[in-house]
Length: 167
Image 1 (spheres, rainbow, N blue to C red):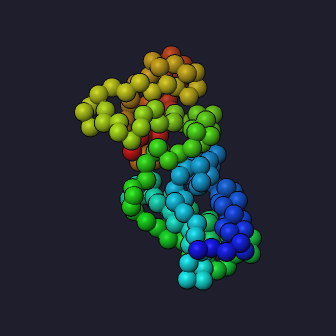
Image 2 (cartoon, rainbow, N blue to C red):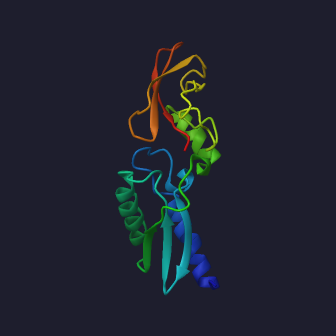
Image 3 (tube, one colour):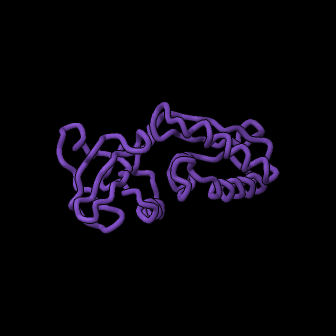
C-alpha cells in the first residue's frame, strides 16, 4: 500500500512519462501508446512496468533509456524499469487522443480492435487515407516503415502512408 508521499511521487512520474515520446512516432508519448502498464512503489523503489508493442521491438531499449533519463532529470533516482510481456500489448491500448495525433501525423490509426483477423484470412481491409480521408486505398506491403505498420497507398490523392496494424 502506498502512502501519501509515494502517491504524490507516482503522480509526478506519470507527468514525466507524458513527456517521453515514442522514438519511432514522436507525436505520441509512451502513455498514449499504452506501453506503460503501471507505476507502483515496492521494496523501497518506484517500479515502472512497460510492455513492448511486439516482442523484439527495437524501440524498447531507447524507450527505457528515455524513461530513465526523464526521471533522473527530474530528481527521481530510486526506480527501476521493468519489462513484461504479459499481457501482450494490443493496439486497443492506444488512447483515442493518440489515434487523432497519428492521423494528423500521416499515419492511419488502427481501424479495428485486436480481434481483427483480416490479415490472417487474407481479407481486404478498408483503411482511410490520413491525408484526404478517402477509403479508396490499397495495401502495398504488410510492412511499412516499422514492423508494426503496413504500407498503403491512396488511389485518390496518390499518397503512400503507413497504417498502424491491429494486434
